[in-house]
Image (cartoon, rainbow, N blue to C red; front, top):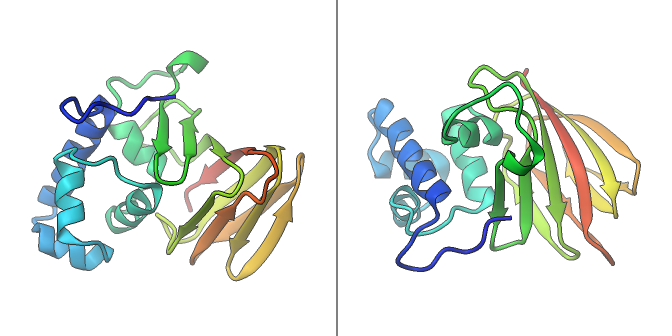
Length: 194
């Protein structure tokens, strides 16, 4: 797991991620104000993320992925140093949403043309993540709980999942992932682009 960087030394992944977000915005000819309006995020938050002055939250990255038509794994894969057909466990990119404690491991080797990917997620007890939209409408997800309990709401339907349970859904609207405790939840998320 990555450790929080010092104030003078931004995390290298945050620096590459910020640069890629700025590139995506520039490719579309958008100003920060244009992107802020499309994503529903403040201009200052976007500016700070692009300059790696702050580590973006999962909710912010989700909104930006939706605007740019990418999954989070695709975006994070674009900032990795070099794609490979095999990624050893020790080399799998790990990203943490420091605000919620959510930890995301990209298990699948990164590739710009991915249609399917595996992600390992960990939520601490009490964590509650809400996404206002999918990064790509119609995204197919298979969520398999490996440890703990997870409450997932998709398309207005709540699902209480325990160890070993698997939920398959196609995501069109808001989703929510909550770990009711008492322990942490660990799960595998298989994501398939429509």
